[in-house]
Amino acid sequence: MRPLLLPALIASLLASPALAQNAQRPEVAAAAAALRDEVVAWRRDFHQRPELSNREERTAAKVAERLRALGLKPRTGIAHHGVVAIIEGGKPGPRIALRADMDALPVTEQTGLPFASKVTTSFRGETVGVMHACGHDAHTAILLGVAEALAKRKAELPGSVMLIFQPAEEGAPDGEEGGAELMLKEGLFRDFRPEAVFGLHVFSTLPAGTLGVRQGPLMAASDKFTIKVKGRQTHGSRPWGGIDPIVAAADLVGSAQTVVSRRTDIAKLPAVVSFGAIKGGIRYNIIPDEVELVGTIRTFDEAMRQKIFADLKNVAEHVSAAHGASAEASVPDRDGNPVTANDPALTARMLPSLRAVAGADKVVEPPLQMGAEDFSFYAREVPAMFFFVGATAPGIDPATAPGNHSPKFTLDESALDLGLRALLQVALDYLHSPPARG
Image (tube, rainbow, N blue to C red; front, side, top):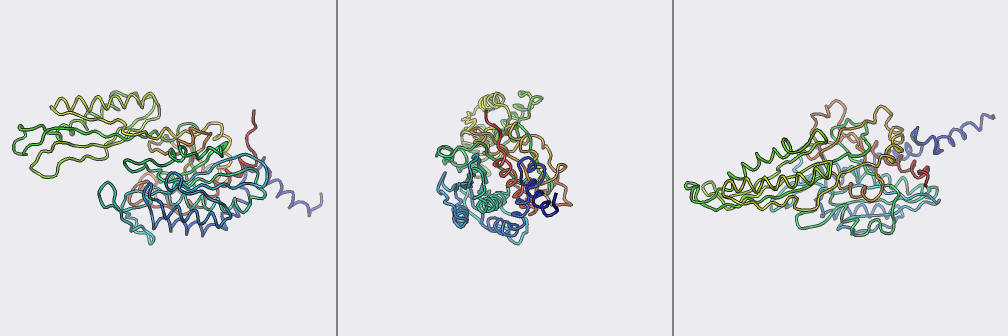
């Protein structure tokens, strides 16, 4: 063999489908290096200017502007502020979708970062801070980077890639629809139905430099409930002159804990019932007419999910009645997110791709997560894989680091590089070597 042919042969072997999943693709490393500063800048821009669910106007406009600069033709206004673009490869091949979420949370930032959010807005009638406390700014920046890397290689790309920049993953405001469910309802997959969909999430409980993925159920189903306990107003000095909904609500909260601890088989799978807000009354010496309680239910099994709905409603009604009050229990009060489950065959197939970019010892199987994701709606439509990207900086214990949704949640920006390389490697490996049909 002539020595001059050796470099060309090595390059050819590295680019082949057989080896692509055992080693990081050279084009992945090159793209990540070229885009690193740009992705960080995008993330910081989005972080400093966050927008709540169904209000992502500026974010969507910036995303669409960038996609147009890449020569793409984004569709905008899907599910209010969703942005979708298709990269058509120059060669025949499979269709896949890549998704990132764009919305922020009603949280007042306490990180002290030089690019920390100072945005405030109105949420449920109150003035609140707005913060990318869950890392969606990182997801959007990562997918923009992947989009640029793929767009620059589209002539040699086998197949097509749908880029989904999704609004309202955190849930639409009361009285509105939004998120993945609404994007699908408005025809997201009608004309372009992918064979597989991939997504990622930066995660505080994993150290930077690691990836987390598991087959089957990964994140819980999430359902919101509202319970209104109705009594009869009276003066605080004469509680016998009315019916106290505050005492009834307090008893209800305590009794509701038995729904999980005594009525649910948590030896099978975990479940959670949590109250997030209690509102009632306006003055210290007036017992009010009504108290409202809102909360969340998390489950991994549909039968268990339905049983908890019934049990919580039963507790609400009967505990209230024991106090002479009544309960209007909306359990759930809207359609919630299903379980986020990774397709076992797809996940097993793409696991080597994740190991190729992070290292085999840096890809872990996380425990079941009680957090929820509306990526689950895509996973109900087509085979899906969702994975975590470690976000906590070296030297900080992920077990005690401020978690996602905390006002002190801080992303180690090396997660941007790893997330981009992982998502790009997964996309290229699938496109170059799709599973055999039939």
